[in-house]
Image 1: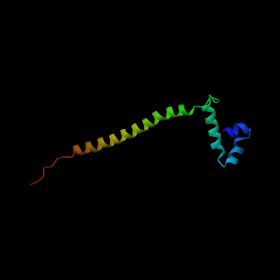
Image 2: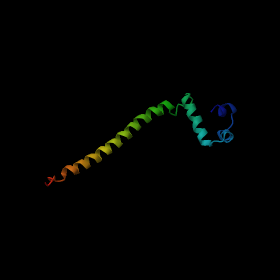
Image 3: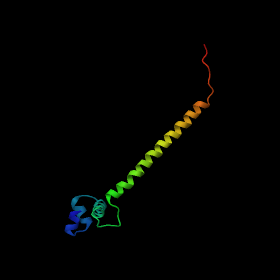
Image 4: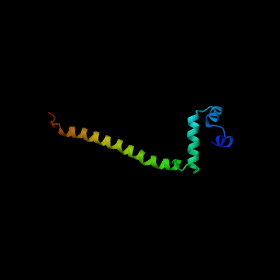
Length: 88
């Protein structure tokens, strides 16, 4: 980001010199600007992390719920089957 800011060169030129994709560098520059408060229209990294945590937990809970549903169906089928006594 510093190279883009100090040189005044376009992001695409700096990216080419660094051997990285221009859009990757552009995103890094934008995120650095947001983190420094220069881009109030974008979320800071800490804010993105705060939003990602509940989403991750929600996904884990959904997976656990699906597993529990499958287990309850399995055990319900087991309980519905007639019991036979072993023959001696």
